[in-house]
Image (tube, rainbow, N blue to C red; front, side, top):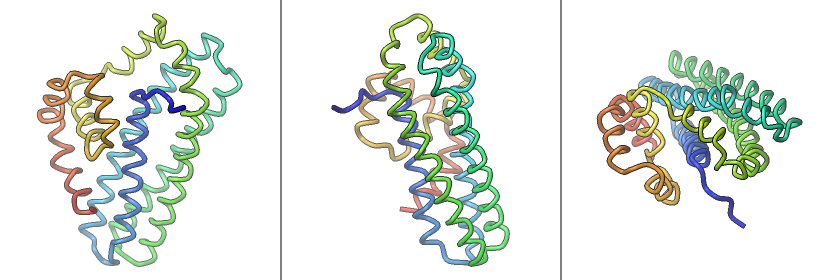
Length: 213
């Protein structure tokens, strides 16, 4: 039976998509292409920022709500540990890409590729764990006022941040995810946020992935 889709599913899809893009781009990158290496470092910095914001929201709002409700208490320390492991992995990949952007050397390219693979493994482990162990529990309580308040807090961000988010998440997203987004967020809202407040993403990040495909 296919699990019900949530915004969490859509965000996880965007994370996996960007890590796949980055791995493919590095595999095609010739040593010495400093301009392309800098572009990839900038695109990864955007992914790191979005993923970090996502997990900080869970740490601040979702997991405390689960703890208060007494939902899977044994799982919450594991989630916290996995968040810490992801943060460390993202920091390592950021450093590896910065080194590659500075030198362009074959050795730094190989190190960056290895770092991305390690980060993909850490991220996939957590996302899979969250999707199979956390989301099914949360779905059983989504109509409760407490969860509605959590959702409100997660959505609360300035227009610029929301625009960057929607520009990122919709960039090459899967069609089933796009269909879910259409059902969940009014299309004019997504359009305005993406086109007006997501201009920085569309100008600085989206072209990087366009070159990678």
